[in-house]
Length: 266
Image (cartoon, rainbow, N blue to C red):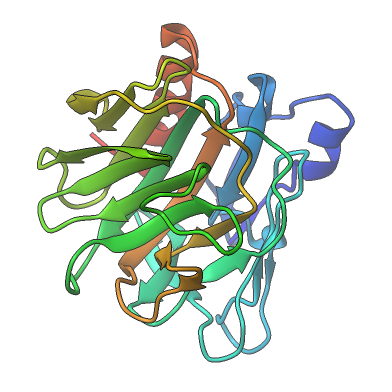
């Protein structure tokens, strides 16, 4: 399986089409590239084998960001997920409840506004909410830090939590189960919205003042100044696309249509 590597062309300011092959057989292609929409700040694509480092077999020690920010995610020995899953003929990164990837460094973007798309499924559940994607300040936590965002797998769907000290806004949806698209939106005025496969599931507001996250974690939760050994994801992730602004309705529809077609989500 190989996906054409578009990263160098994105840095050059162009946005090539994408193709996924199984052996010599073309199984999917698209003329759309997420880099064609402004403010792309993170793009992790499990279908693109060129974006991975494998220390042994299918174990992943690095998952490279295809956005121009190059916020590559690393996994330490003993906590490496595997690129061993498959959804609709395309590979996914599998987390078994003990694995995670992180970037313990400044991200360079503000989270005054966000639109985050995550294609994932939870296949089993641990206690509480399991971390999918966390943005955090070093030494802080996702409950009262001024730049913390947590997207988590809850018992009934997924949870989108934003902490802007001293307030917390949290929305939970039960409208998503199985393989699908979780879209989380943070508006500049402090409204947080959770969408499951394109449908608004929950909304909250009341958080204000903001900053820039000091790191990113995938597959685990971060609070009390540390990556937690519990509350980790059991499931697989196909793609993560993050923009540091609220997308327009046409832009949102374009990204979701691309993800639906690529990952065969109805």
